[in-house]
Image (tube, rainbow, N blue to C red; front, top):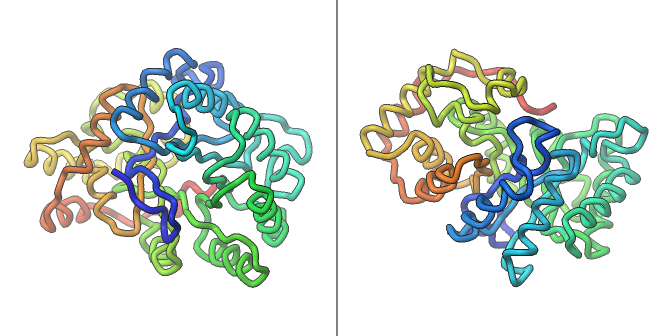
Length: 323
């Protein structure tokens, strides 16, 4: 159930619980409040999930508060869990310097996340996106300072172009700063463009991969004509990422799932977990059986024929999810 994050010594669970669904329903209708979130964190811990991923922008900071409160209640030893969060989008303010990756924004965002999480340090601190308005040298120097100060243990990045990631890593290494140890990118059976450059680059650099939206916002977990979830019905970002052209892949997932006698979600996650460069997909859960499916996927063994059937309907897509 545990694996190393990239080439580091940090152990993360093979399934990461994404905390975006927990925080404040006023932010999004499908978000659960503190009490409604409690059973999900409890069950995740029971199932052996020890890694939890949130961001300052989720529920305008309330997701971090919920994450910190629940883990503080349920985990006796802070070292038993890995807490990951992100900076870039901020917590809703449009004021200058409240978002982005300037030194001022990064240092302030980290301190605010530490307060909301109620912890002394963040295990994995990630930049949520690339900041085209700030020199990457400024960002990497600020992130390195957080590591030196003991506020952060490891650094990670999220969706960006491979050349941007390579530039950030180069800048860190030539200056003797801390490089990124992980990449949280958009990767699933409906979006495989990361296979062109980013995944080979991560494999070459020994960088761990933590895919977001591994079930394509639920599209891979249900038949094409199934009723939409509360989130997918109102989530404009979902409609931006996926369309009906993906139905062939979704049908293939259903066929493989039926052949193995497992759920569609288990097949889609098993396909991801089969890739040696993928350390742990970040799974969201709004029903407890979502957690059960995610962990059960670890035991699903897909054959080469299964993989060929799952991958055959895929058509190349534009780059999506970087902004």
